[in-house]
Length: 317
Image 1 (cartoon, rainbow, N blue to C red):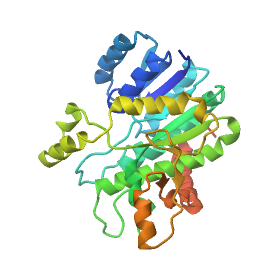
Image 2 (tube, helix red, strand yellow; image 1 turned 120 degrees about the vertical axis):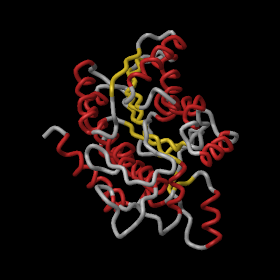
Image 3 (cartoon, rainbow, N blue to C red; image 1 turned 30 degrees about the vertical axis):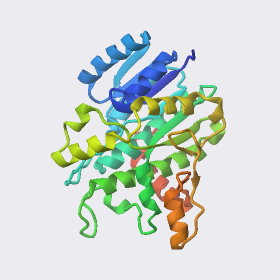
């Protein structure tokens, strides 16, 4: 049994719920950070009954809203003197969405939820992570970033705060993929920033996961069929919850920071393959590497500058 305080965003469903159960079983105080409190209260009770751990707290959090994040962090600061683990599990992606969606802070919704929310939250709670003997942060990346093996693929930073530029039509799949690459860039930058504070910050690459019936029923007909087919070849939420737990608690990762880790717990490397059809084919089939786009210093700098500019009004002076 281990003792510690863990925050899990989106802990009321999917991998987040499975992770909350895993950490609670292992003796952690689990802070469920969720947007839908009505649904989450039922899940909280279920987790306590399953794990026999009553140290479960539910707090409201909309990761896409800077005000919500600030309120959440204020509550945490008032009631905790230490955080051991933060898992940025919550994410936004709506299958087939055709309309450009903005957050309350006028940021494209995928980026607000998947990138800038976790960035601000990590910054605001960093002092509590410093108080842990082994503070760790985990962000939820995706195999979707493999599209960046295409040398023409890039993040369109000019289309994140309003209408798309240059007449480009909105594509929810590309925007989601771009946000997950941006999340990885942000993870690497935060890891570098906090490396001397003893805070380890890593990303985990999540493969296709079995979707619940509740999730699938909200899809349109075509996507329902696709989801059912995908489920036959997908990992379970419990499997990924075990991976979350291992990365966030094991001595194997005690010194690891600024890494992308696959679902099997293996640390991945930026692609070393050169141009040429043979090399490109090898690159696509090599599951141990991620696109070199994520290791580009200019890309990291651009991501960090934007994140700092957008969140600066919400950070202490």
